[in-house]
Image (cartoon, rainbow, N blue to C red):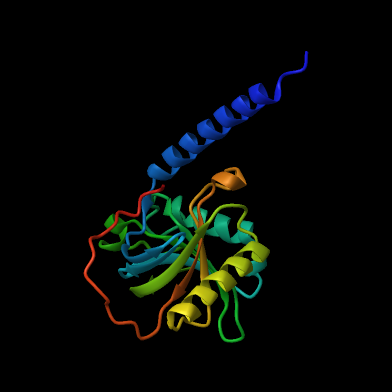
Length: 213
């Protein structure tokens, strides 16, 4: 028996709504790196980030092998550290591709409770603890699979916006993913961020909790 287009559209809507609720609930279960929104223009924001402590993997090849990087970091938070300490997963996962002067990186944000205590040292040399210095960043938010072509497209869009605003950004951008790999593309929260240069505070604003939306 053939179903009417209206019925099929209703079923599709129910599936999408269920998936959206599940995705938001899944994100809400994780601590998210805090930031303050300074300015918003559609899907673009200027944010103030505090210093963040990261567990990172860097390698000349890692920017093309995300799964390998992820598993190395996952082993670290699962207990591959000098205290055999279990560390809670957080969002987002930051990624930065290699350049002529630096290696590609994938990084987990350490929970604030861990970052302000004694951070356990990784076992081995592949995972490193580093500080992501705070500052102002322009961020563009989008859905879909976080592949290089889409990241490059959104970075170009963000840089065009910065140019129109008369703002100068760092040469290297970073991308951020907030969802598990099996989350459907349309429900994912992704971002490209560019650190701003020489930007003075424009106005006071209230902190915006960085909860999953």
